Amino acid sequence: MHRWSPFRSIILVYLTIIIIGTLLILIPASSHGVSFIDALHTATSAVCVTGLIVKDTASDFTLFGKGIILFLIQIGGMGYMAFATLLMVIFGLKPDSRQGMVIKEEFGLFSRDKIPQFLRLVVLTTFTFEALGIILLYFGFIKAGFPVNEAISHAVFQSVSAFCNAGFSSFSTNLSGFQNTPLVAWTAPFLFIAGGLGFIVLQDISGRFRGRKRRLSAHSRIVFITTLILIVTGTIAIMALESGNKLADLPLMTKFTISFFTATTPRTAGFSLINIVDLLPTTLLLLIVFMFIGASPGGTGGGIKTTTFVIISFFIRSRIKGRKSVNIEKRRVSEEQVNKALTLFFISLILIVVMVGILSFTERDIIKERGLLPVIFEEFSAFGTVGLSTGSSEKPTLSLVHDFSAVGRLIIILTMIAGRVGPLTFTAMVMRDKVTELFKYPPARIQIG
Image 1 (cartoon, one colour):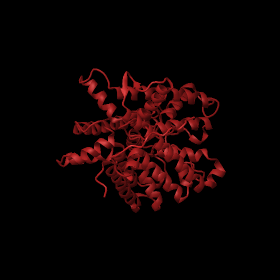
Image 2 (cartoon, one colour; image 1 turned 60 degrees about the vertical axis):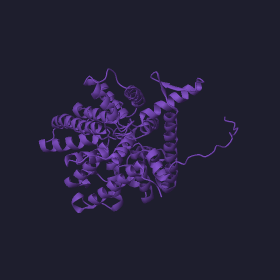
Image 3 (cartoon, helix red, strand yellow; image 1 turned 90 degrees about the vertical axis):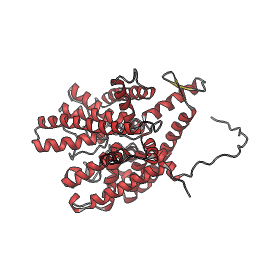
């Protein structure tokens, strides 16, 4: 019999929320008609803050249905334990030690010290950024010519979805058409960059501004620098690659806006200013790399995380130089952290390769028509909880997964869940507990390379 594990609690509660969300979406008042598999996919995509859609959020769901989707996005973005703790505080309850352990694992915290303060920061930060986003987006939509009531509803939906890195939009064409509306085209990236940085980093920044710290922690500095490098290199690369393609004949500022937006959105946001299907294969491959890296630990995004990418990069660098230790920011990375990063990387890669292998069989008709790259792109998007897609052949405003078979859709659903809770958590849930080694075998001599 397995002993209690916070890893199992995390994934089981997420599954429970997804099932409840599915049932709510199936209520006739929620939509204009959805099947069970469509409702399951929509609920999973919302809770896992992904944004791959098989139904048009704008036209296929009622106001009540959109509210359900937004509620699921909020739970998924904040983390269910943060949301549950908020409700507990409202009713005068306190999380016990077991719940504290789950919170530690869900947010990737170093310890359980000051968890109540951290959760207060999560709630306060989430609502503050979302409120600021609502105000800015409201004026943007007003400037774009929307009536007041529509501007408010669109602003609320886009703001919550953007900060939670969900990628759902209350517009059928996502944010296409707002390239020349700065309050929309720049507010959305601001929100999903903030959400992607992670609550650990935001807590560190908060402490510094309050005078409690003189400088940011090594973790926060690594996240900031890596995020900046990825955004800058991505913007430059996309602008260069697409200057003769999708960005041709556009004003320079519009080119820069689209390039910046497109470079930041694969960091698990999923919003788009342009049709992704129109991008060059080279650009799509670049976006796949960004989707795989994802956001930062303890945030609203998915992927292997920026810190994992940095640790592996420095590990390779150290080995090439013949060094045993991995040093970053004049700090030594422990062997345990290096092993965890390598394990996470390879489990994630193996998971994606296996899922693509299954999809290459179940979706062979789509591959014959459009090639393998769009299917690979969809799988990486699901794993990174991004939501970008090359689009359905039947209904271009929907994701390619709309055209998948029932088995293919289930593969994407499982990938989204694994991407949201984290491959290590997903693996720990299905694996046995650690066994103490009573003895060690003699070393093997195996030639490499």
